[in-house]
Image (cartoon, rainbow over all chains, first blue to last red; front, side):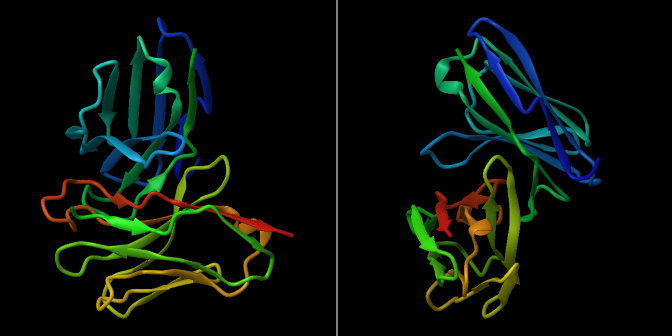
Length: 113
Length: 116
């Protein structure tokens, strides 16, 4: 595998379910990110991790819980989501947290029913 | 506030037409500038970049010139193809904006559709 991979690619979950999104980067980068992309809204940065430490949380509701066990893996744990949380969730990585060149995964299309 | 302002779409062109997507920015200093592209069903990928004033970034037939006088970084392609149909994002690097955080600042995106 090369680049940034995300699983699953598609996820349908009920509002009471608990699920997790997984991201893995094979680029040797030190920074990883979660973004939310909704229709007709700008790309929203959710979380930033630098060397496994969370350095930014952009006022994301607690029903989204990130986890970064090492610099190559990033998870987004989901619980008691709302229908408005339906979106494309993109993971990205970069060499350093202030780098403008970020490498994105293909995203997980999440639908909350 | 500090931001990236990008031409709103959607833009629809015929194959072989000339493309321009406008992008202007507000930032402190002279940051690097980026264009990202998102093809249908995929994540974003870096299309091109310019690191200093008057630099021209180019890739896949696309070009953009960093104009500090007009704080612009317009994307152009002389002859678009159906395969260029995608959403294009102009972006500033982290901390380039006054009081900015550790995040890329993206424009809202411009959807391009190229018809055969």
